[in-house]
Image 1 (cartoon, rainbow, N blue to C red):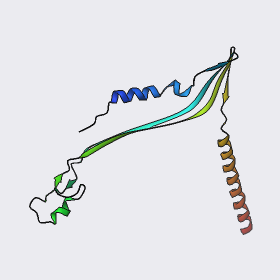
Image 2 (image 1 turned 45 degrees about the vertical axis):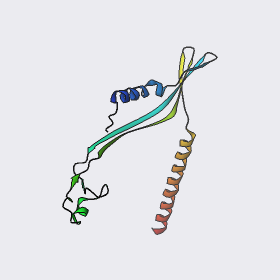
Image 3 (image 1 turned 135 degrees about the horizontal axis):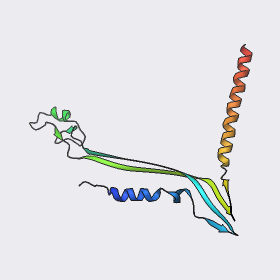
Image 4 (image 1 turned 90 degrees about the horizontal axis):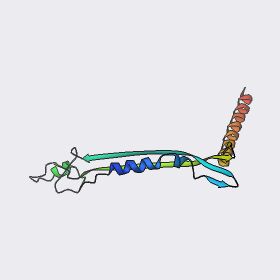
Length: 147
């Protein structure tokens, strides 16, 4: 039995999952100040499908996937290749990543952007810069001693 996916239902679900709701959160209001959170959202997806495998052949009495040549060695009259009755397949994959970007803060008639600070990214950048600087100093010292 073959399963055919409902592409209309899948496309509606994907369309609902993309949009402003994924980037902007629900507004929060307190003491006359409105805060609208925002995020960076990355999404990707893919799909694949297959059909019957007419190219591969198996021996009639051999385990699935065994080549027809193995059956040809057994001197049986009906040891010729037969097309595999099964085959096909498919799949769908979807991935999403989101991280805070900041928030719009609305006070009266004034609107300002408050960026989210990713301390981990700042620390990692500092560590990478330190390692590169140490490697550069080491290279310069070795070069000066040789020269």
